[in-house]
Image 1 (tube, rainbow, N blue to C red):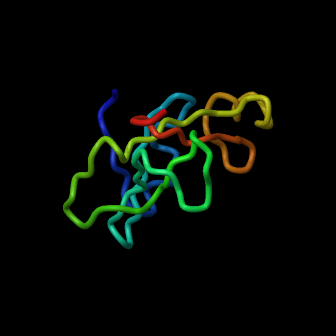
Image 2 (image 1 turned 90 degrees about the vertical axis):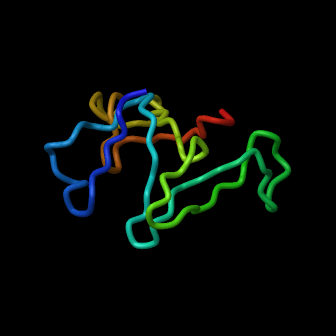
Amino acid sequence: MPENITIPGPRAWSNSTDWIKNGDVVRLYHLTTHRRLHSHDVRPPVSEAEWQNEVSAYGYEGFEGDANDLFRVEIIKSMSDGEAAKERLRTIQTKFKLVHVMSG
């Protein structure tokens, strides 16, 4: 897996960063609450589907997180609009899923 890159605040939208591409693994961090998108192999209370897991915000300032914070970007090419949107995330044009790395 490539090196983790944290892009703080407004710089997250700068064009000087690498694009998020199909298959990239990301860790989503909420700056205000210092929590990360997090999941376990636990069914949500609103679903009985075997393939659905509960997702929450977890952590605190200074906490590095763990492997349950990792999600893989899967672009849905058949639903994305334009060639660039089928290769990397583009606002509005790209349709994608976040797949929890640990539970698939």
